[in-house]
Image 1 (cartoon, helix red, strand yellow):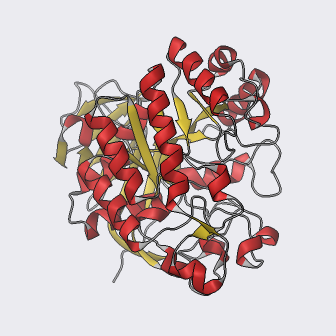
Image 2 (tube, helix red, strand yellow):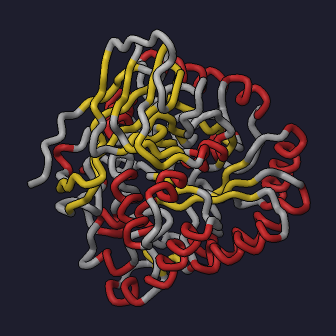
Length: 430
């Protein structure tokens, strides 16, 4: 199919484009930017006047809940949520049941996802068998099956020697390792940041030190082994400073934060709101501001949704008993725009953090609209205000701390491989 996207404001951070230009697509690729190719005759014209046309979003953490947790969500429901949010490429963590530690499981997941003809799915393989932190998986076989990186997800490493061996092996073959820094002994059974709110509410706490000590260990091992490390879901001011220093010293380190942590803090827990029970926990206002500053100066490479659909039965319970996590893939774009607007940063900076930068972390050719690139595209109205109604979200998980909040920016079209996979008629705000 040949598609002409006309009159939109084209923002492509990789190519330094931020201006009104038309886009021409054919055979699933971008064939021209600006002027139509000779003899081009479109089968479909999309009028993008007043809208932003940008690369499809790339999300580094979307739990699809399959296999094993279909009662929380299904592949179909979460893929629909992804394209409704303008996400065309996503990485899924290995904390399924069973964990993604066998090539057959990875191949099955990729096969099912491909048959849905929606977003591209990039599995992150388990670093250890069953995520138990004891025995390394067959990383080479998992990579051949389609894994783009290896991780323990939320499972801790109790034995630092195993972690060192994992990094040595990964470095030998150039496999990237994604780690969420948290010392299991210091974190214990904590559910909230070790601050005034946890003290007032009597909640078991997780100190920032739990992240800092684990991160220090990871960075030292990265230096010793030469492994390529991605720090997933950073949450503390001290952590940002450590990553900034590590990058200045030339370590091959990248990092991301969850979009929730760019906006919320421990204060948003209020009176035991279980929707604000997240992992890592929402930390202090000082931490939140440091994360926002790190995003602005490039220390933090990317924003992700950390999409975690949770069943209502395990969420609407007392805070300390609730399962951690929040749905977020449909809110990644508007919340990123909100961060950029509040930080007085250009739209191109916001879009860079959720397109080309996470694509580079994944090691995929995505997040840009160069001629010849795959036609994975997001079109959105940057001035459309809408209220977050959990029941209207496509995700099977309705757990969000933003319920009832008005956000700005709504996706009207999502294209994957030149096919329109999502289309919404947006009624203009009065």
